[in-house]
Amino acid sequence: MDKFALVLELLILIANVIPKISPAIKDLMLMIKGETVADISQEEFEARIDAAIAKLPPWS
Amino acid sequence: MKRKIQITVICLLMLAFCLGCATETPWRKAAITTYELLGVGVGSTKDIAESLKAQNLITDEQLLKIKDVYNKARAVYIAAGNSLKLAGKAESAASRDQLLVEYDQLLADFRNLSLELYNLINSFKKVSYNDILEMIKNGGEV
Image (cartoon, rainbow over all chains, first blue to last red; front, side, top):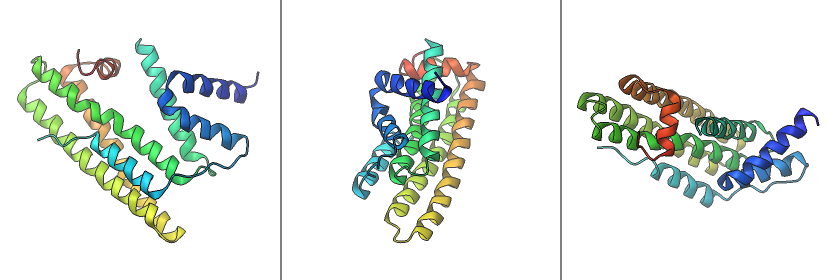
């Protein structure tokens, strides 16, 4: 098994262990296969930025 | 268990790096993944520092220093998020690239402040980076 295949196996294993990052690994696999990956909408993009910021509450 | 956390963190960083570097990655997806991953660590430092204070492992003055760096990091993170939103709305590729350069600079500043935050906690409490990771996992408990 070459190193590239080993890395792919590792990514699949991580995706199974950490469900939260599964979509990102799925996209990466699609790109490796040469398939087109659709981008997210601006609305979802902004909502995720706001959600990430909300996880850092102000500390007064 | 510590090794598991280390491997997980390394894998997350590798994934963020892969997505960030892949030229055919839809840029919004790549950018937001990196942005979200970088925010996670800093978010937990507030709980950790408050937990250390509750256990009298750090002084009020040390807590204030940590709080100050945390709030600076938060402000930079919000500014980076705003740049990212504007980049998403940009009408031309040139203006988007310009905004993404600004975003990259802010993200670099945020990374530096994150490191400063971890180093502060580490120096005050005399804990190792592994201990901090363990505390993140346990929700702030030593």
